[in-house]
Length: 111
Ligand code: AMP
Ligand code: ZN
Image: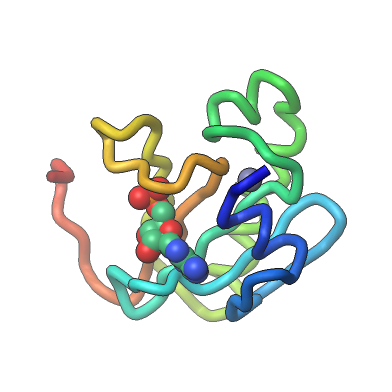
């Protein structure tokens, strides 16, 4: 399958890996929107996080747990976890991913 994030999981495209195990891969976003901007993705391909959750809710739980662990490990007290689902919501890569953003303040409501 011609999927950018599947290629990162397979090691075919380089990425700055933060954490990796049999279930998920975490790596730094190539265009960071905050001082910390990490993507946590399932190693298995799903088009978005909702599809992943419907197929394997435990896996999505592990991905959120990983985000919390990474935030704790790097000392983030406040952070934002973000999931864009569908092009209209800003999704540009159609392999499920969780954004972990931190190191600055964030506005609410989001744009
Ligand atoms: P989204 O817009 O929610 O689909 O998020 C996709 C994210 O993937 C964006 O924040 C991009 O900057 C990021 N991205 C795209 N290509 C790469 C890459 N090769 N390595 C790391 N992050 C990437
Ligand atoms: Zn994929």
